[in-house]
Structures are given as structure tokens and as C-alpha cells.
Length: 306
Image 1 (cartoon, rainbow, N blue to C red):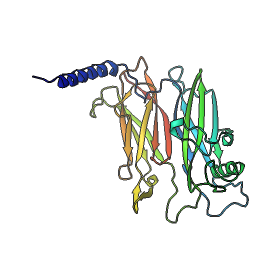
Image 2: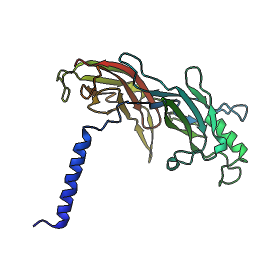
Image 3: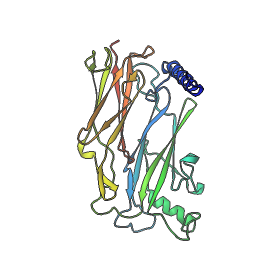
Image 4: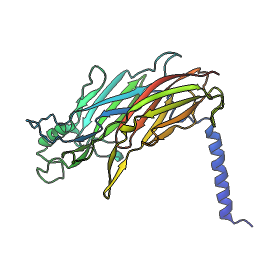
């Protein structure tokens, strides 16, 4: 005889299976771009170290950082380029209250509006702005000892807001700032280098899970851009790069891939199902080194044969 608790477990499992089956046909994966999306904010450099030789004035410049956002929306008609935001705003915050508060600025008076250049990028000197904020607070953060200055390491934020057709999308880029000089023998983090993003011919069932009319996508990363970094306990680790795929139509067999220095390429299959009448798709690949460095490739135009 089955116990009541066992019956309860079976019924809940059956209910979960039914709910999953009901949702699986209608759920749109996060890799499908259906409206305005911020795919990435590329930061050069993604990590800041104070120069060994200090500038002649307290205002810097110490280390300039340039950021570019990739914000896209599906095209209005087949063959047209992806739509871009109608408005874009940027701001810098030297000290945040963290994820639990939506990365609100800990010192609102220190939040600084950034003016984009002609190409849409913004450039900021986080150490100089952090020091300017401290100067206005008497040399130390609220709650810190007087004149304590900047911590040895601080995470600063650049906030990006894009709007289009009444939609607003916000993204926050977190940048690690070291207020000391780069230790001897250690590399400052740089962004991954994508050397290739290509779409192949129709799969025609040549690969597992690749149906007729589907397309294979390949991403290659420069092996020399996989850096070594301290891993704690006197260990040195080498980066791995996560690659996320995005599309305006179809479904990916794998939404993410992984590249290493030993295997510096990854791939996925864009399945020609659930196209909703589309005959082509725009696709992107975003490579992230898991330490703040990221790169964007695309869009590629993929034409489906069915």
C-alpha cells in the first residue's frame, strides 16, 4: 500500500510535468530578440589599475575607460537592419549599494551623467571621479574612518538606459578598480578577441540535432586572448570564455557555448522551427571571459531554406 506522503509526491510530480508540457510550446527562450534588448556593454579596459607613475594633478587622468553598448530590436521588415534605441543615456557611480537595491548609487550626489561621443561610446576616468567624490565628502566614505581615502579595490558602476517605442531597458556595467599599481608579472584583464563568426550551409541532417533547413553557427576566439590570472592559494588559472547566442527568429540547439585556449572555438545550430513566417534571422554572439571582459560579434543574416 502506498503511503499518503508518497501519493502526494507523485501527484505534485505529475502536475509539474503537465505544467512544463503546457509551457514548453509557448515559452520564448531568452536568446530570441523580440523587442528592445541590451545584449552587452563592451568595456575597454574591463579592469582598472592605478598607473605606477601618478599624473601631475589630483584630477588625473589616471585610467580612461571606454564603454559601448549593443542595444538592438528586431527589424521592421525582412532585409532591414536591426532597429536601434531612440534615446540612450549613461551615468557613472563610484560607490554602489549593491544588487539588492538595483545597484543604486550609495552617494547620489556623486552620480555623474556621461556624454556620449559621436560613435555612441562614453569615456570615463573612474579613479579621478572617485577621488573627486571623496573630496566632496571630506576625504572618506560615509561610515568610514576620516580621510581613509579609496579602498584598495572598489567596484564602480556605469549605468546605461535605452528607450524605443515606449520601452525602456537598463543595464549596469560593473568595473573592478584597483587603486594600487598592477603587481609585477600580473596581466591587466583585456577583452576576448573574436576572430570569426560565420554561418554554414544548411545542415541537411549532417550533424546530430541539425534538421534540414537549419544552419550551423561557428565562433572562433583568438587563443592568445585567453589570459592567466591569480586564482588564490598561489594558483594561476587561465580564462574560459562563455559565448551566448541571440537571434530574431528560430531556436538555438544550444544557447551557450564554451571556449578555452585548448579549444578556442564553439558552435551551435539555429533550428528552422518556430519561425512565425520569417525567412531569415539576424544573429549575434556575445563572448564573456567571466572577469568583466566581453566582446560582441554580429549581426549575421541567416537565410532559411524552408
